[in-house]
Amino acid sequence: MKRTTLLVWSLLAVLGLAACSGGTSTATPPPPASEAPVSAPAVTPETQEPAEEVELVVFAAASLTETLTEIQSLYQDVAPNVTITFNFDSSGTLKTQIQEGADCDLFLSAAPKQMNQLDGSKDADGGNTEGLDFVLEGTRLDLLENKVTLVVPEGNPKDINSFDDLTGDKLSLIALGNSDVPVGQYSEEILTNLGIWDKLNSEQKITFGTNVKEVTAQVSQGAVDCGIIYATDAFSAGLTIVDEATADLCKQVIYPAAVLNITKHEAEARAFLEYLQSDAAMEVFSSVGFAKAP
Image (cartoon, rainbow, N blue to C red; front, top):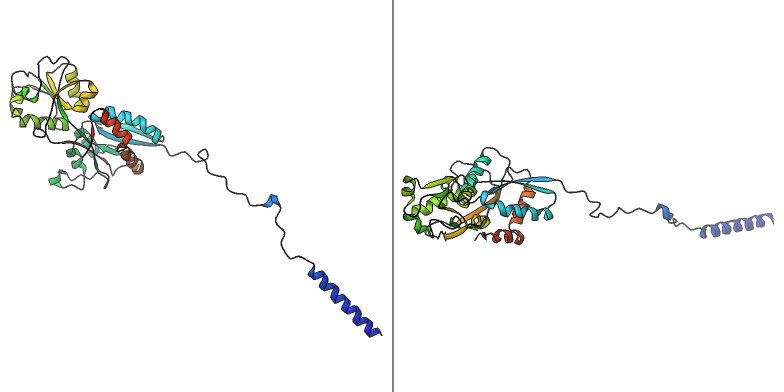
């Protein structure tokens, strides 16, 4: 009897444990709402770090003064962190300054000659007679085309109306650029093709300017009978153009541009050079007589 009772109690105990075990949940409860993972804050223009301030030094032919100054103000809206500092002068002077170690990120020349002199991809036959290497590979391009013109002071006192008039007795004094600047080289080419270069020199009928702006100023002030300058400078100065050099008198006037391999801001220099090719920049260039280079 006692043995039977023990067996019954043992069986009841086992059944009780099984029941308790089957009723217990093993799932882990979700964490309280306060312990839920926190997402990273969204990045907005207000939370982004401002772009690093950069100064770009651009060496440009004097004939680009007005247009690049206007384009500079437009570019401030595109890249407000970039400050552009211009050095305007004759392309020959700018080439020499670069060669002598001046800081420069971007060079815009009024003729291929000065760019060729700095381009390491050119040999002596290609114009790099000094073996210089300043042009960043893959960045050089022909940016603009200009025209060479004959201009006269207000009222045209000597009644000079064409390049042919320079061969007669009307001319007393003409203003030209020096032989080391593109506008002077184009002028010498024109007068040589007219057959009067040596004659005008021997008769001391030529006065020279160190860049196209000096030549323009001499004409504007009436200090000379006429001068040879770019069409764009004539437009900016409000001078009267009486003739334009044709292909038989003067080679095509092309303005090359390139980032220099001495730049410390290659990305920004490349970006500004790209902007100079944009419709917005070309509209400014064309407003004074430049054309996109063919």
